[in-house]
Length: 452
Image: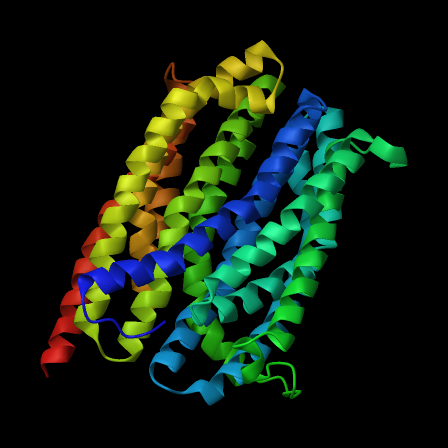
């Protein structure tokens, strides 16, 4: 990042930083997208199993990686304030924390995975695929979270093109191993949906190796000498990271886990409905990478300006990013409406499942509009290190308003499974409105500080 004087300069710099982030996010989610679509071609049971496994994994990954995202505003503000000597120490402590978090996930997953799947009324084959898909993913948890930390460091320097390049390098690896392991090509065992989990783990280790090489050997990252000194574990630094990161992580977790909760509740429906629900969620989540990319960029830009005490510049980035994200949300909604037929064909050859996917996709249009407002605002607030109130807002919106509304509509009206989607839409809309109010409050407070 660098200081900008005019709105035109800000727009140019914002796009330079944001476009690689967008490509990176689409690339990272493309791995999950390919897991689901390619498994769907192997059969409805494989699609349902991978989709359910993914729905349980994504909230855990996004929530806990959200804790590590605290590194982005911390490093961005350090750089903006000229405290570059603090950066290597912060990154290394983040790596230590990521390993600790990974170990907790692996142990916790081993204890609760089977009981959670047993709560769902799944067919035996769907249960088997979901279980072993997640077991396979477990071997990739450590490299995935370590990569998240290193990516925060790279992005905080505004070098988002590097993470884009690394992600694009890893995609062919993921697609190749998905193909040979799901379908048993070229002498590899035919693992079906479970092969998608193995392919993802191989990809995560590859991403970590490539990223370490870039940070150790390529400018400007090598000047920070991240791996030169072995620091002792600092629980004080972990505490600082967790104080900022836990509310971020829980905010993301409450938003993403509600989809997993809906999947659990929808297990009372048949396999076709579960598969269609998860396929539609998968595609809607793919488009969700657009507002999420705006949020990451806004955290970097706003964090940099706040660190330099340029609150007016931070507000300009905020307005610009939110309006652009809203425009992209409208475009995403139109894409879903027009392309819902071809999209359903990516996931299944079953006409009944395809019809249900198209119906769910109509509801997902409203997800895009709410996310286009709420998600960028969350990015702005993280740039201000304002994370506690948004956490409470997410909890209330999704779990106390959205999920109960969906349950009532699904079980006591004729909406059936679509009632849960209406509940999700309601929760997202309430959260968006609450976050808009919070943004107004935070920026007003920043203005008062500037005038003192």
